[in-house]
Amino acid sequence: MASFHKQINFITIILATGMSLFACTEKSDVGNHSEKELPTITFDMSDPMQREAAAGDADALYDLAYRYQDGKGVPKDEAIAFELFKRAARHESSTVKTP
Image 1: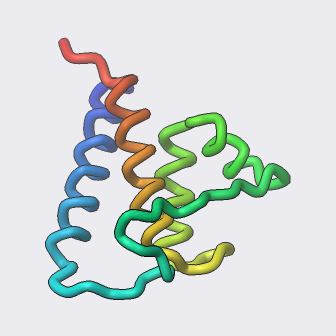
Image 2: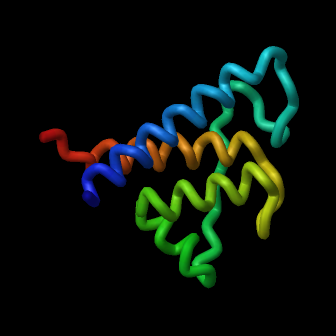
């Protein structure tokens, strides 16, 4: 059951990322990041969820990405959110086992 849950989370991340890319039809200055510049992500180590994200926990990275996407508890920054979604997908895919 846990394996199925992780596969569903991975699929959700991929679909959300794909839909975000599809929805972007023109260049914008989201987060004031240039195309080649990767956003610098600093984690607040006093926040347990951000500590887990810094350690590479896929669920924490996913939750933090949503925080940045919506601006809940952190400054709204879609470039950082996108980078965190990518990190979460990489960590999630390394833990998903195929039957």
